[in-house]
Length: 221
Length: 273
Ligand SMILES: Nc1ncnc2c1ncn2[C@@H]1O[C@H](COP(=O)(O)OP(=O)(O)OP(=O)(O)O)[C@@H](O)[C@H]1O
Ligand SMILES: [Mg+2]
Image (tube, rainbow over the protein chains, first blue to last red):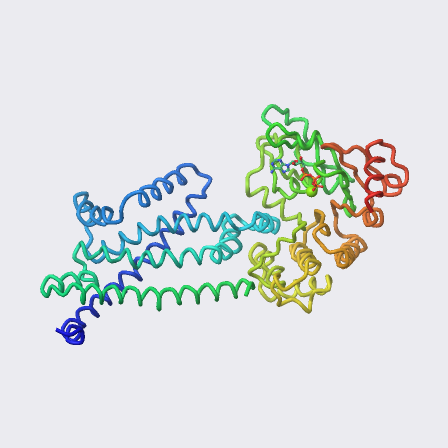
């Protein structure tokens, strides 16, 4: 079977899988941004209980494997009465895991905003919430965008694991095709190329564009 | 602070001639290092007081305590008759809560050595931010007020520039306008010309001169420019290791210093210039 024939026979399923991967990726990214902001800010709270809770969260999700977390969420949480369909469990697990890494980026970027900015905001009598929202976060965003570019690629790669709880993503389709055809080179080769092209030619340029736009908005471009 | 008898401090200052700012027995330390030791200083309404002194003598700390950027370890600071660092509870002064601090802090504005303009906002937006967000003013009104102030500091034509496009002197003038936009009663200047190239220092000091001439603000300034201090101050305080070693009119302090430390300091400054 030529590669052209392979694509004719199985390209459709690969495309279906890719679309699922795309949706998983977008939803997991949304979850991780929300998680990162929440826990990144909590890590900076002065209340020790709030801070402690966030620290434990970040430690657990960064210190254990994403695959184990995925299985926990899909297979173990139902035993405690929390049930999700496999699609939801997939992007939630990836989002919660990557969000823990993101929280550290948020925290680091906020701390990297010069102290003088906090003080100037205080000197015009802003409330702590106003200082954070209006002055610190916009500047922290510019600082954290480049490392987020890497993290977003990690999120994309991380979504491949959802195939293991039978979400019909690109990886799942590739495995199914491989099982029935034994054309490992063609199937996994195609999957590899799709992941690479998506990361290299869609996600990365998008993040760069956002970075440039932010840098422009802050008047640094 | 807990060991101090707070009943010695009045709940508010009363009488005809209350100072705009009063430091009463104010102490500040960082760990074992005492930076200010029982500071007592009154600043009258409309007065321009300059603080001079060697590096590390606690000059910046005085301003930062008044701006509430630092907490104090003893004593009370009063602003416009009311305690800033404390508030009344059951007839005695207790450490102020955030709401009280914010209410009193609204009377104070500050300019910093390194300007600290918000880099993601234009000059105009920097000035409008406080009036709109903090005072709840309409955008239109805040813009009018800000443009007026930018004009006063000679920056109206750069209103839409981001700070990164402005020179140090221009940034500092915008920072002055930003602070004034909040209509403070007391303005604090911490070495606002120290980070500037010599040729642009004048454009900033001229703005401060204008403010002095307008007589409406009470000002407390830290500077290393003795000539400027001599020109515009009503009173000069010489700080040395956390205490006011000597104070007086510029003529007295620069013309006929009494304290040995003051003489040494002024000689050293003169020689270096
Ligand atoms: N956050 C801090 N932690 C510890 N020590 C500090 C801190 N801030 C200031 N100090 C110390 O307090 C003392 C007074 O500092 P301050 O900044 O008020 O001096 P200054 O008179 O403004 O000096 P300069 O002319 O160099 O600006 C110095 O010994 C300084 O090292
Ligand atoms: Mg200083």
